[in-house]
Amino acid sequence: MTEFQALVLGVVQGLGEFLPISSSAHLVLVPWLLGWPYAGITFDVALHMGTLVAVVAFFWRDWLILANDGLRLKRTHEGRLFWYMVLATIPGAAFGYVMEDYAETIFRTPALIGTMLIIMGVILYIVDQKAPRAKDISNIGLKESMVVGILQSLAIIPGVSRAGITMTAGRAAGMTREASARFSFLLSTPIIFGAGVMQLKDIDASDIDRAFITGIITSAVVGFLSIKFLLRYLTEKSFNIFVWYRFALGILVITAEILWR
Image (cartoon, rainbow, N blue to C red):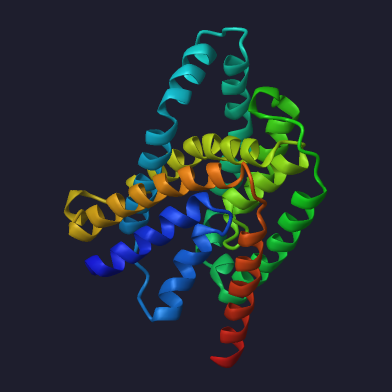
């Protein structure tokens, strides 16, 4: 892993983790298209650490309020939302643990990734156009939280996109675009943290080099800017730009897979 490769993949992770385009898909496709070897579990940890830094840095005030009210069992919206997110995290964490081996092998084929990019693009487009836009984050209840949490389980398949499936689920549950994105970002915090912790056991201090640090810093900075951009963008615009991007990339990947066989 060179520092340049770490920089490129850090940008890919920072964009893909928080935009509805699938970071896991891009982290498979970029090395595949460029002929780079798999970066390894150590670098996966670096990227997860970077995006965790990004989401915590952006939402630390929100999390202080949520955790304070939730752990003190206050009867506030923030207190309830804290426990809603705890419950909503369980399905995705359980499914990810059970299906981890498949995620590292069968699910990483370019043809499947290209197909899922297109299918989820279609679903996101339809839901975003048809769904009501009534609920902001202060009106999110247990039902909406669990719908998002259960569907988040599908994000283990590269091409689905954790951000994409949770924002789509949020829109289907009646959230505004901005609310669905904000809830998705908050819900990503324990998932990203858990993924990083699970992988820490496979590395030691000798694995940490300049490429590792480059990956953390790049994914953190780009991730922070991605969150800021999307929350502002969705106050006025739809998800269409990401839908068309998913279509274009999916078609490109499937075509390349056919031609390179």
